[in-house]
Image (cartoon, rainbow, N blue to C red):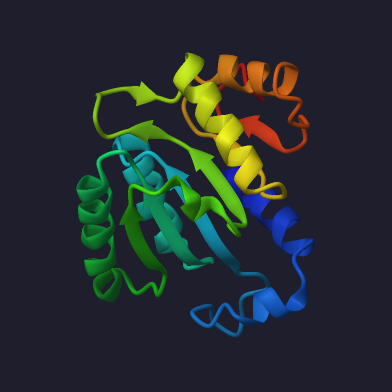
Length: 174
């Protein structure tokens, strides 16, 4: 979470002020508010990350994207329903459409709901990374799984994604 917060601050610092003004759910005392974070994968990592990010109230909108759209939507609904109790205002939704990454301030590669421990790796992960990098050419790309260091390496070496833009949370990925 700390690495993500640092990257969010860097991303928002480069965001035009008009975009930051659209973040109506952030409190006046907040210095920055990230407009949108898209999390690819509604598995255990994706769901937990969405919940924690929402609870910080530093993100205006979170979108969970998973091949199993109803699972992503259900997790988003569960998180949204806890917002009055936990006192945060982040809007959260779920979908199966990867095009949701267009315009996102940060894109996170998590784990798929369809398979336990289904972190994005190997050829499917690389294909998704290529597609996402083409749809959103500016957002930082965070690989949140501990097993995604190979995906980061291949993304930098084979796809030519700058190392400053593609990073991860696993010990080898840092």
